[in-house]
Image (tube, rainbow, N blue to C red; front, side, top):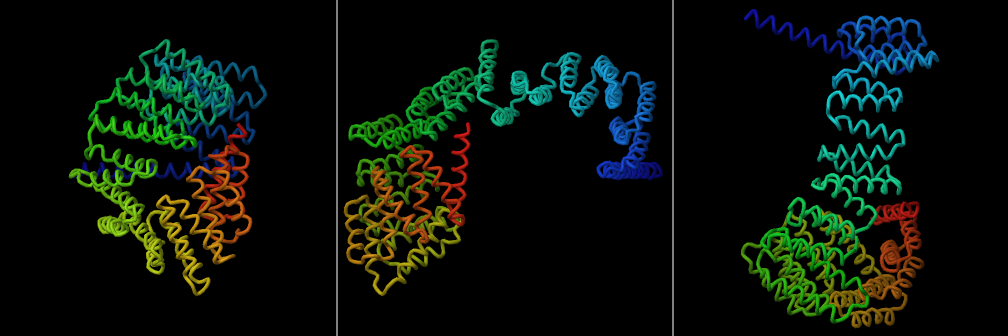
Length: 603
């Protein structure tokens, strides 16, 4: 028991001493920060003596003396320390700094050389000296220290991150790249950070240097997939996707990854609109992956999706293009069958049938078959029901549509997809002219989890309020709702006739800007981009206080950005939006795109 008490007392004493030291150190640093160097020097010296010669506190003590320009006391102290610890190489750095402050440059250089000459194979000592030189902005000497340290420790790359940083601070990008590549080869978890540093620091010529070094490393180390990965990354940064794909395939074969190394790149190319190359990449993944694997299914779905986008991207696509797209889907199902595993691809195919081939019965048949799969996930079951509901609505089967929406709503009360189902039921009620019930549902959805659903619900609720309160008749709004339904059903000519009838029967009605907006959106769906421009411009000019103005401006900016290839005009419109409609939910996105375009112009 006495021994335990004694041990407890010792622990308390040690803890008390540690806390006391920490408090003193904090006080000393506070004195130093506020320029009270004499007080700081006194405390740091006492801490140094109590801690049995802590180099950290000693350096702080000397820094205080140097700040006081008390060079004689500082030099006397350092030389006394060197007599007691002649092999402590870091003290020579301290002495060199002192002499340099006294303008004794040659003597200072001699001490710096002494310091490096006396380095021992001690990681702690090498770290301390390298840090000391770095703190003094002696980058060349710090580099020499770390390089010698790697020799002494027989560990090339041990100080690669420190050396990379020092070379960067010197502006020596060639060696900065070399050390970062070495570090990335040694530490896989550091590779994302290295790429981020390259992106932040590089100019065009640095990418050229990086490519040169990577080609050399690939020749010397053909079995190291890392260098091929980095070369692929360079090609992606420069948007040289054909070369990137070549590297990805090579790396995939080297690592026997069954297409996984190519799948990520394929997704990047698809997002960038490089659909033809993405298709080539997905075909490769299909060829090398196991036919029953998740990778194969993902690649197959993405390949068909890219093929669809390739057709849609071409404003002059032909019926023959659609036949090829249809046959590609049929070929896939002939090879892989229709099951819960391929359900997502069946849903994509249903969309092709409904929106591109105008074959609603086939789309509905596909989705009804999806509903029969016993092992279908609840998520896909809900999504396919919503899609099926839309196609029934397009096929004028309103009862089946609302039934499916309601089923999804009931089964997913607390989920986002349940909110989506409620929104679609509210939209259907609006199409039917049941405005009060639709508005009540929109008001509930204002607090939806999904920001997109919430914003749309707010817009629709405000729209109904504005237009129901205009006059005693609901006829204009009823005609508008019927036109919206026709538009949803892809009956564009009938929709336009209905919209025009409002303008004829009710000239200068408050729906004028809404009609122009719906027409413009419909023209975009029909790829009649130039015809949509004046309609958006009219809304922005003549109805800039109304609810459609910010949406019209954003849509117009996107038209110039993506379809009309006029970056300057697009940037101008994005800027106009976030400056003049700062409260709009679209302002943040407009600012982001405007700044991205400005950055590209600078580069």
